[in-house]
Amino acid sequence: MKIMKVFALIALVYVGIVILFESFLGYLQPQNEQTLVLSVTDDSGTVHERVLSRIELEERLYVAVNHWPRKWFRLAMEKPNVKVTYSGKTIEAMAVQVTSEQELTHVGEARPIGMMFRVLTGFPPRHFVRLDSIDPTPQTLMPDENIPGDAPKSADNIEPV
Image (cartoon, rainbow, N blue to C red):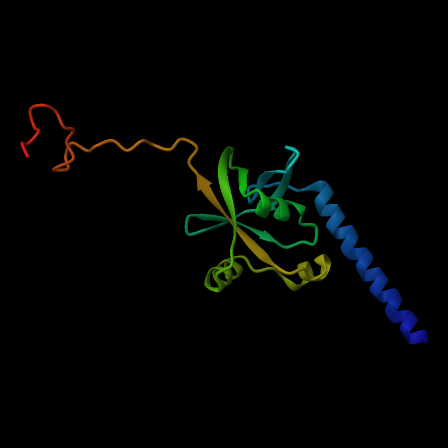
C-alpha cells in the first residue's frame, strides 16, 4: 500500500511538472529567428496567434505539433486558410497535415527532439503541418505571342472553313 502511495505521488508530481512547463511555454511564447507566428481564425472570427518553431526543408515550410495544448492545430485543420508571419513578412497559407509516412520521416529526421523535451512535455504524439503558400493575387493567363497558334484572332488571320 505504501508503494502505491509513493508511485501515485511521483505520478502526480510528474503531471504537475508537465502542466507547469506547457503553461510556461504557452504564456511566454518565446520568439526568435527560428520561430513564426501562425494566425488561425475560429468560427466566430476571432484570430488566435501561436508562436511555433519553424522548419524549412527543401523550400517547404512546416511546423510541428509537439505539445498537448493544441487548439491552434484543431483550428488550422478545421479552417486551413491561415496567415504566417516570419522574417518580417506575412503570407497567406494553407495548413495541411502531413500524413505521408515518407514525408513524416523526412521532416522528423530534419528536426529531431530530445528525450528531455519529450519528458517535460509528457510524451505527446508528434504531428507535422505543412504550410503551403497561397498566392493572393492569381495571375490571368494571357496568350503568348511566341507560341504558334496562340495568337489572338483578328479579321486578317482568320482562315476560311
